[in-house]
Length: 378
Image 1 (cartoon, rainbow, N blue to C red):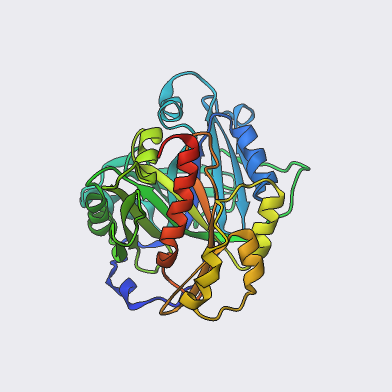
Image 2 (cartoon, rainbow, N blue to C red; image 1 turned 120 degrees about the vertical axis):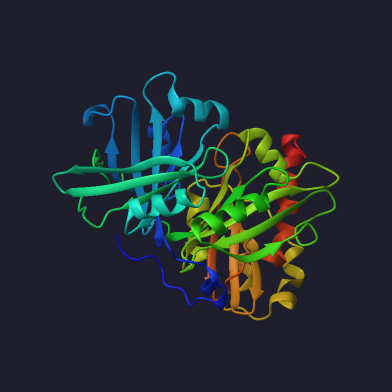
């Protein structure tokens, strides 16, 4: 696996302790009610390419998994083949959603020992699996809700994905849409749990706090939330952690927790080098995005200054703009991509900025509130 994107790191990253260390995101596994049909959605709508498969034909009797990839982003979609068991329990409770955030490491046994010795609950003790193309060592720990982190050591493996998988090579291969890597993944946790989990990432995994937002930063007339962004030492892994804050009505975090039945991954931010081209293609393929009012664009350049792009296509597509000391960013958010109002995606293009769009929070959350109102959950 090639190295993830390189960043010019702010000094804040130097505070993180890279005792694991983490090389990047290996893959993200979603538990789905129907992995076969979900795989078709991520191919057709999102441009992910088929990579690997396991199921009855490979000797897997309890589950089926489809592996898809676009540049450095790898998704694994898994469904149960039998009644009962942990996969069914997860889907019954949460609906379709992220179960595993897998992290690429040099030494999975070391990563497990370091994290469990600092208080993490073990999910998987170091386990070696192998086939004719080499061996992989995996280990894992629990994090917020039913989400887990898997540590994947694959330097001795040359196979298609992991032992137990075979190459998946269908004729149907829609073109990619320009997505390059996972920029960050956001976790929603319950009331008064944000500090608990930021402390977990600090003490257990050696992360440091990159930035924090309180209810004064992230609020509208009706709702509010708080967030802290945790990052590892090389800056390749960034986990914002959100919790609800008091407001006049039900916030998006409360709605998520109500329908997801607990804490979990709220959204995955996918980076592109050309957000206009990527979003145009995604919209052509049926991906729905939040609607941003035209009035947002009347004053946005007064706030962010000059940008390289023409404003007209950004306005037409509803792409948000923000600036920090390092540069600016462009971002856009989908509506939920599952039936429950839970998981969604962010498309982001960074033009130097290392921040998370603080100047867009009000417009973004008002757009989310309009969606909540239409669902009757505001």
